[in-house]
Amino acid sequence: MNIEEIKVKLKKMVSKERFEHSINVAQVAQRLALKYGGDITKAEVAGLLHDCAKDLDYSTQKKMLIKYNIKIDKFSQKIPKLLHPLIGAAIAEKEFNIKDPIILKAIRVHSTGAPRMSLLDKIIYLSDKIEPLRNNDGIEEVRKIAEFSLDKAVLKVMDSGLLHLIRRGLLIHPATIGARNNVLAKVALLDAGK
Image 1: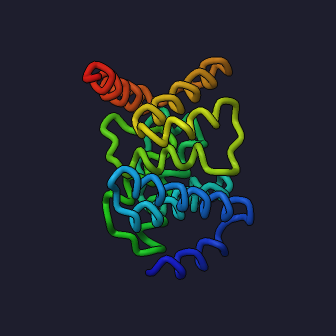
Image 2 (image 1 turned 135 degrees about the vertical axis):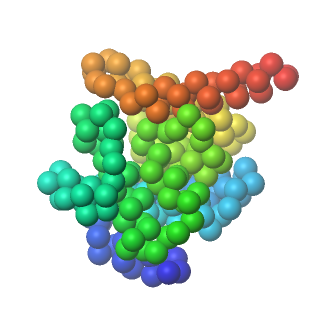
């Protein structure tokens, strides 16, 4: 399935706002892939499809977990917002015929991060948070950081997200803690090498 076919099919599956968000994420992901030596096509595909399951209601998501035999951990069971990346990766594979495990993983971990994030994982994670429609506090600073350090920008977004969850008294998925620690270690090495 080529990019235009993906866009046509995706547009029928998601809301107008979600489609616009997905287009923006794909564009930011392509730019970051070009800047940091990633695969531009994989970045575009993962960016387009990262939220393909986000507009599904909870009962539909539960049915899709069964349909695609998706195993979820106890944290994802308690945090319904974390189901859409898992279902989205299955939809990308089964309904969009995306077989590349690198793309599928980037979709799967775009909300939580992962202890060992690939370049594409980081690009999609960050692109989702800094695309032009996002206007969170501090987003302009993160966009500037992304121009010179992918890891520092990812770390800044993770820290902000974790503080938000802590302030609201919400559960934090262990994958996010592992992701942050891994990225923090890389940033510390970068800073030590100065």
